[in-house]
Image (tube, rainbow, N blue to C red; front, side, top):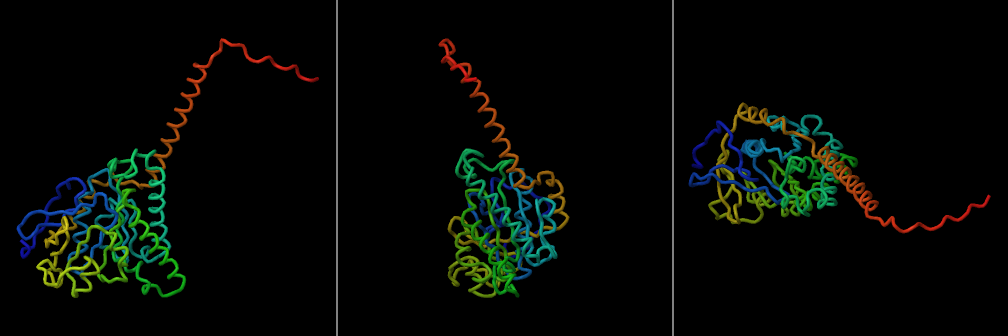
Length: 323
């Protein structure tokens, strides 16, 4: 199965919060869960299958009304263009080269995370959104940063000012990966140049799901997967296009991801575009609902107090007013 490329002609609905990987060496469909985790690392050389898999995996979730996503193309290209119709925001081209634009978009997600964590029990009754289950009003939010080294590697910034903004982006990403899980936020960091600089080790170690397509060196594979044995049969070094390695229930497995044509993706996204909404707008609606309910409860409590008060006893005599 790994030696035979395949093309996907139609999508099936992904069960639960599973991100389909493809088929393993026995031809069985395998998937990695993004439920209750805050980070995913994806790496591989150009043309190795990384962008195709990202498109395949996200499009499989597109027809859920309890997920929203932000796409940032650090290469300033349009590799994820097919998914744009389902993204509440898509930053590509020259916009992706504007560090302030990228920083502000990520800070919006950070604000969403903070408000959800601060008001979790009032908003959805649990400290962890995954315990309540994401829904239309409180969706899971997936942040994809493709070619993340453009924003996380300090060597990418030519000036002092750009280094400062880059440091802000790095801090926000670290915060989202560290604390975003309970708020239902998942960050996908993707790179064709996997190193400890493009994906800082401390950030990678907080990413529970890791997917590595073909790389040239052990160091590159380690930057994505963490430590692994070069003697293992499940090695991404020199893997064919579309063949990757991931860890399922603690066991490293090889898989082949199917090729997905632009036509199939666009049809899938077009059918699901009506589900797209900015999660910050949804949060504002939820907070307003809380305020409205609190006002109603307060009014009902006030009326009950009036009805239950003892009016049989005379009130205190009013003191005469001085003229």
